[in-house]
Image (cartoon, rainbow, N blue to C red; front, top):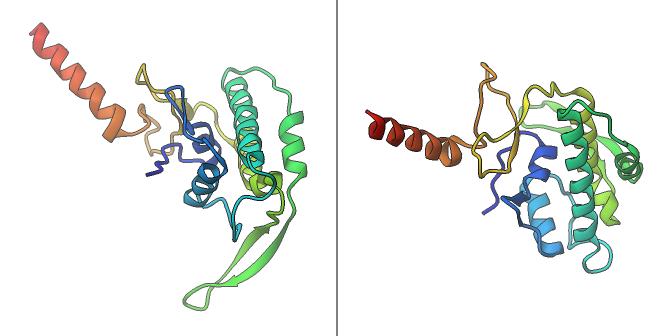
Length: 182
């Protein structure tokens, strides 16, 4: 089961490496992740030669990882690789009828190459880097966790990737520590 804790597609992209473990092992893994993330409209299998999507997705992830880390650290980063990924986007807008006679405007992307298929993620990453308040882009406070998230809580005090995972584990550990001390 694929889980999403980042509250932003670009951070969910970074979270495809969990505590040093790669979650993408082939093109099918990337396609499954893209579908679960709502980032793919490709009707059939991965475009390109076998392994090409996997390599492109990992390269984009590491480009975004370096950019997010630099932006979080307040340092400059080279936007060249991300701009190259953005240049592959071929999209057009469509007007879609919604239930209740409403309308919405949606982007449709070409998906003939791995780079085109990944273009929506590149756009999401660029949007995050250009507009996000990086005080709210955080790593989980669990010392063993490597996941990133965008704190969208009202109080902006989110500390954990997930309360069910790291939050609960840390709260139980703190409780046990207090019990032993008292």
